[in-house]
Image 1 (cartoon, chains in turn blue, red, yellow):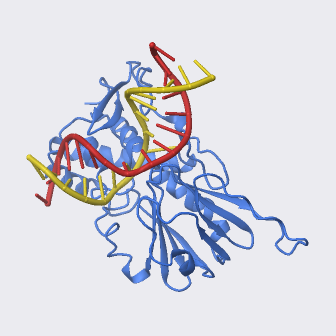
Image 2: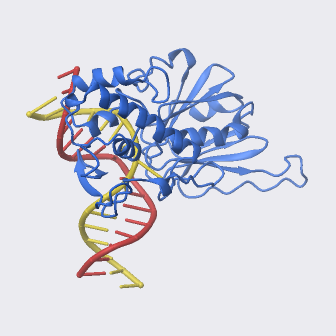
Length: 282
DNA sequence: CTTGGGACCTGTGAGC
DNA sequence: TGCTCACAGGTCCCAA
């Protein structure tokens, strides 16, 4: 799925099309994604104006003018597609934009049709009151934002010391740090020169410093590149991110390490592939 | 409490 | 060409 840089890129891409815009029509083309939509989902969204678009971890938060918040997670394959509409006052009226397969939610504003498309349907949406946001079961346990002030070496070290997991699993744990996924964990560990299989509790303070700095560096670079486009990820207007051209290890098994030239290794940790350089990462 | 494995889905590409 | 299998950016849920 979209990890933090991709979700933030989606947020930025949707903002000019949704901020201060009214949802003229809302269509749910099926009753659920990963979870059922909340009751009267489409009706409760229809006619509302989006006041603000936020992101928390890999969640997109659309604040509405009646203090509801639309919570959207893209799962593995979710994406938003914006199709600008011609002048809405044009006569005769332009025909509706036909939905494509796997377009599950269609929002229309005066200026655009915005489809949420998700073939695997691992994504989900919820609609809650803004005061319930902090206590929402899916958000309450999330750890600090990796690019925020609450994420620092001391925090990471504390969490590492009381863990019996390998570093890879520690960083994928959204309660430790919120927003990393398989790509950016692999890349961050490479840049910190740390082996993904290292027991987390063996981390030293110097290594924790290196790792927090690496995470920040990698995420910042990925954001600047508009995220990574593999397989099916695209931004709202169809644009591709280009960070995938910068991968040092992710999806590079067998290819030479950019630092030492050794072939990148691929192992499986808790069911997920991890790529790393066995020489550079210890 | 933590941890690991299975489950949830569809699409794609490799290999036969 | 057509089939089967492995694998894919996530995370919830359950058993141990």
